[in-house]
Amino acid sequence: MRIRLDQRLELLLTAMFISDYDTKGFCVDPEDEYAREALEKFGSFVAHPAVANISRVWDTEIDCSSPPHYALTLTEDIKLDPSFNLDQVRESLVPNADLSRFTADLRGFHRKADFTLHFSQLQSRLAPWLEKLNDLIARRPVQYILEHYLGQEIPTTEVLLCTLTRPFLSVTVSGTRGETLYCLCSRKWLEIAEQKDSLERILISAIWHEFSHHEINPLTFGLYDNLNELNQEQVNWCCALNESIINAITIRLLLQEEVISEKHTDWMVKNAELNKAPQTRAVLDLLLDYEQNRSRYPDISSIHPRLVEAVGPPPR
Image 1: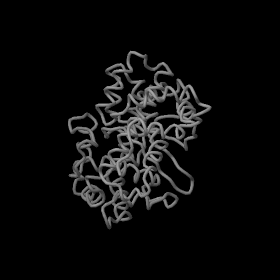
Image 2: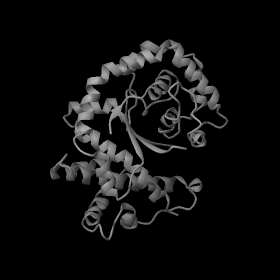
Image 3: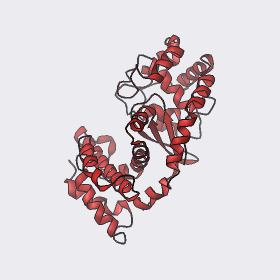
Image 4: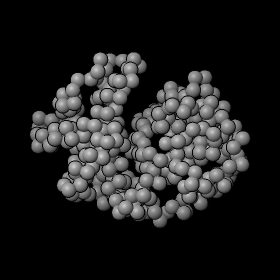
């Protein structure tokens, strides 16, 4: 497992950032060093169709993972790759959005803006830091540790560094070649973590956290028969439980791998419970039983009903 930059992703995120699309909460602040550079280099392309028409493709209320999902289904020469499930991409677009037209426009922006040169410069600039991040990842078999804890194999994984995004994200891309799970790491937040001497903890926990969504989310949302008919209360309940489970799993793994000590646990639990994971403590206590009784609980799905019981029945 290695962390790298992805030109397709950087291209789309740059177009989004310089557009009038509302990226608050998704992209870094305009005062950020990499944001200022993007505006200086590409601000003159604000009227280009690939930039001006962003809001005709994605609504501002969409899931933050939708634009990266699209970018990661493109070929290296910025064309739609039919081997991927493009119907999944279209599900989160504005109704009647012309994905083929937008992709052609994005390809034109890539060429006219000489984005390949910009990306090459980014790679050179970030190479020493990427090497440092990869050294941290290489200290332990990150994916195997998570698979062993969950009792389940995880599909192909990739970790990507994003220069312009604010949150960490998980994206699953599926097609004829199977599934690939992506963990998108915020360059900004990793820089802040490094300044606070917590880079290893933030990087490793982000990877475990984002990849865990692939296994945990279906278990929780699977409590309902028809996902298309969920109301907001039900969606919020599922998301809160998922975040609580995943934060608790991440804390247990960090402790087991001695990335943190017991004295950090209370702070991490409180922080998680203040950030959309209100049942982290309750789940954490049950995970101790899970770890000590793996013959009874061979995988995370086998204890999931008990985790649901601990937080109360799902709203109907």
